[in-house]
Amino acid sequence: MTKTPPKTPAPKAKPTKLKALGALEAAAKPVEAMGHAVERALDPLATALKRAGLRRAEKESRQFAAADAPVEAAAPAAAGAPGKPGLKVSPMAAPLPKMPPIAGVQMAIGRAGFYKHERPDLLLMRFAKDTACAGVFTRHGIGSAPVDWCKRQLEASGGDNVQALVVNAGCANSFTGKPGADAVRRVAGAVAKRFDCRQRDVMMASTGVIGVVLDDGRITPKLPDLEHRLTDDAWQDAARAIMTTDTFAKGATATAKIDGRTVRINGIAKGSGMIAPDMATMLAFVATDANIAPKALQTLVSLYTRTTFNCVTVDGDRSTNDTLMLFATGMSGAPRISRAGDHRLADFREKLEAVLLDLALQLVKDGEGATKFVKINVTGAESPASARKIARTIAESPLVKTAFAGEDANWGRIAMAIGRADEPVNREKVSIKFGELFAAHDGLVATDYSEAKMSAYMKKQELEVSVDVGVGRGSASVWTCDLTKEYVAINGDYRS
Image (cartoon, rainbow, N blue to C red):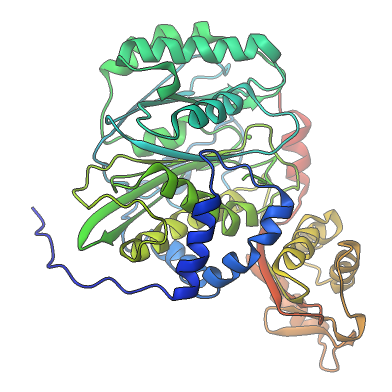
């Protein structure tokens, strides 16, 4: 047994960060529902926290597989067989980490038969009594029945005492009206009866084809077997069960210290296409044994969604089912934390953001048909919100993405996308870089521009494009991938 290390004073967060976190916590609701105007108002908070924090999170997200998370012995292709037969495993597939049990979390997977081929498509998770839950969900105009259910139940309960989560792949149960809502209610009722809890204590999530009512008759008969097989060590299986067109299972794990006590964080996610989260087809479920009050948990997940999942895009299409839920069982022995800005959460906040970012970047690396992983940096913008819009416009441009696929440093397409964002820019000061190579500087072609060096750089699998628009101090980063013929092939016969 590992001995608990002696308590050491936690590093104090800077006053500006604590003040900003306090402001957000005061405004947080049980279910995240911020609009774009509110997001812009919160930009100073994101800016204050991300300058150092996000850089650390990105660095740590790349280290988890080698440090905290020993990977399974199998190679990525075998460890995460594609959710749909015939798909090639992404060349950027990340190895699935070995995720340790989280005290207070049990899970089991099964087959409900939503797919024609043999594969698990059902996940049941059970949580210890008094588990706190927080979530961010799609703001899509056509949401799904499970999204509606979770938002309504979390608002009613305040995120207290969530007991279970049921996830199915193969049927999104979106755009299904009252029949879809009734199906969700029946599944939640059946789980609640088995677990002796209220219906509102059961969360639901679905992914798959839109416009098909969930056949709950495929799920409820499986519940007795799933309950019998619940185990605390099935995170890898859970990550595979929720896949659709994913080519590899996605997971991340980390440990943190809260007041000297060790706590664990595990997360799984699915997503490959229809990825441009705006919460927050994308599902992510994260659990920790930390003891954090629901309101503080909601503040944290709302904040870090902005700097992780809301900063990635595969194809610019938002899903009707985007869901990220964070569960805290409180069984680590660490003290209960009621404020997101509590200095004792400093390490936990950093590790949580790193886990979320790790999962978000894996979505991009598994972009349907993707062969390039690209980071877009925008600086010198009027505001962080303006920088994000410019970065996303570049990242989601089909012309830009196909240039990446063709390994063509066509910086003119970057310039096109900058102007198309309809945000303030100073044309005479605009600069564009590929890696460390300037393509344009101060509104003109760079004097040291080299087509040969640019072409050599574009052959790399991971690329970085940096743009400065010369009007202010706002900055943002967005991660994306290229657009290939394979993307068209995958989506041309999605339902077959």
